[in-house]
Length: 188
Image (cartoon, rainbow, N blue to C red; front, side, top):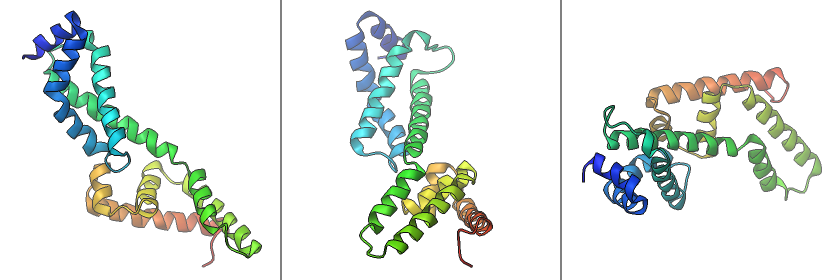
């Protein structure tokens, strides 16, 4: 079935048109969404994002201009953009405060109250210092040291070279060290 026929079917018989659209392009859209979100979402959430892409196509069906490109091209662009937006939303949800709370929970069973207070202050100093870094530096650090991702995986998901990720990590750690030293949050 051609792109025009699918769009016409979406107009005339929405459920049948959507079924045809999904049958034709679901593997293609899933591959795009999976490649962008596999490092941050579970399989069920990725499938839900694929559904959102098809839902958006249905909502925007009257705006799709096949003179400007194919339906496959439209789906590709839409899936990439929606996946990138979801990735950004997900990273934002993993806030620095949540990381601090998780670290604090691990250390909560320590018996020395003074040690817990010092750790909490150090964690807060780290969070404050991280907030002062550029978003890209913060993302690279969080991916490497919080999610334990390898530099090659970070490079793939952030569209950078492996060498650029390693260099950015090195520089970001240096910046973080400088910030912490300047605010007295780290021993030399």
